[in-house]
Length: 132
Ligand code: HEC
Figure 1: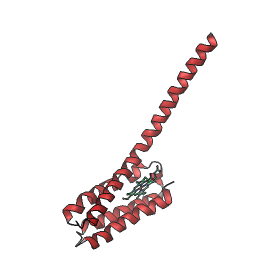
Figure 2 (figure 1 turned 45 degrees about the horizontal axis):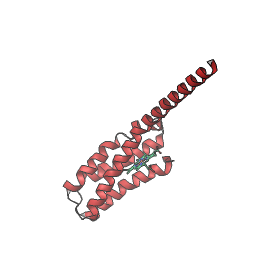
Figure 3 (figure 1 turned 30 degrees about the vertical axis):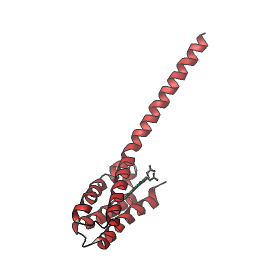
Figure 4 (figure 1 turned 45 degrees about the vertical axis):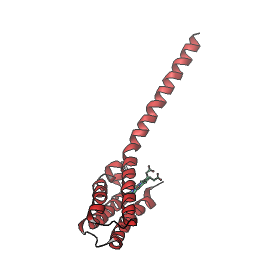
């Protein structure tokens, strides 16, 4: 009888600890996953605008500005990678590409495509080095 009680208590304690561990892991990835998910959605929005030939500032600036703001969250989101100089370099390059895209209103969709392609290259450069 005593054995059974101990067995049940250990089982309950074990599953509780597993649950806590899983939740901790999930919280740890929610921030970086969230930043990447929103960035990805904004890039899709830009792509759709350009495909529909809608490249006025009012079409492109909102997603570009969101991307630029989120660019500030790259290092804090990816702790402890944030101390890696190569990671910081990629993050800075993405921010520079976005600064360039935001500061010059593209004349047409072809010009917008050039600016957005540079942003996209910034995403890919970091993924090449840091995405598992
Ligand atoms: C400075 C580095 C860095 C930059 C810049 C960056 N990412 Fe990421 N991204 C990562 C890392 C690291 C991962 C992998 C996260 C993981 O596996 O937990 C990732 C993962 C992702 C994922 C999830 C992919 C999958 O297979 O699940 C998406 C989507 C994504 N990034 C979109 C973007 C977009 C869009 C941009 C550019 C606007 C961008 N990222 C810029 C570092 C970066």
